[in-house]
Amino acid sequence: MSKKERTPQDIQDRKKRIRVALLCISAILIFYIGANFLKGINVFHKKTYFYCVMEDASGVQQNTPVFLAGYKIGQVQEVELLSANPPRICAKIMLGEKVDIPKDSQLKLKSSSILGGMQLDVMMGKSTAYFQNNDTIRCFKEAGLLDGIDDIKNQIGSVVASVDTIGLELKDLLHKEGGGESLRTTLANIEEATDNLNSILADNKGKVSNLVTSLQKFGNTLESASPKLNEILDNFDQISDTIAKADIAGVISNANSTIKEVQTLVAKANNGDGTVSALLNDEGLVKKIDDTIKSLNDLLKDFQDNPRHYLKPLGEKKKKSKK
Image (cartoon, rainbow, N blue to C red):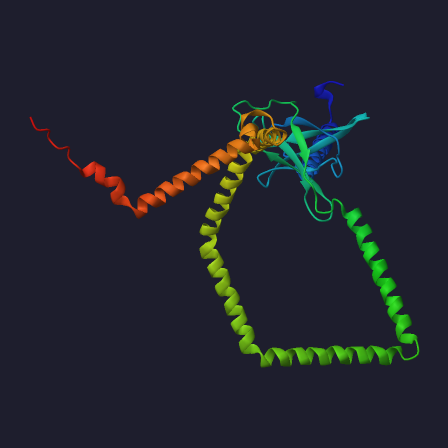
């Protein structure tokens, strides 16, 4: 059928089909843009992709947000297992914002809320070189608030068990005959002891105040004297160093050698060996020495008694002879 042979009805049907096609295409575009908008993806911005490899990807999943200084710049698009032993998980990150990331930057995986959500924070470096599209960024995990909660739960369980045991023991004590009365008596004694202590403190309030003042003065005195104490301790250190450096072993060795020589000399004198022994053991020589000393003593005594007898010849002049 030629153009000229088309009826108005055919033209109307063709226009309807074109409208339906345009509506379908528009619906698909709106659905695509809306779905990406709900995911936080701006379809009109240029996308940049990066990768990060983690050993522990707990909480990381598709659509995990990526922040820079608290501003969302992208999200995780895919999570893939690279190896099981050792475990290595790769996350593909899509950035919807144009951001130049220095090559010494890192990604920090941390908890976004106490409910367990995770997020990735870009820790910007200072390098002048930047990551390019499809590069791999280093990643580390920050300790979360709930890390180690299992150990704390075990400790709390032990404490609760102990408290439960104490409660049962206390219950048995109260159910025994006279248990309640004993507990009341104990509490009354404690209350009485507390009252007595309060009375003692009230009666001796002045003494306690003086004691506190004295302790404060002693502390101030000790603080003021601390430089002198430090100086004394330094002097003691110097004395101890001097003693440690002294050749005490050499001094003791020399003293022992001298003592041995003296012992040898005394032994020779006792055994009659040498000149010293001869002098000490010759009785005739000793007697002569005693007689000589006695004669000298007599001469000195006579000189003291009759000095003129000895000095007169020195004062006389010789008479001149006659020619």
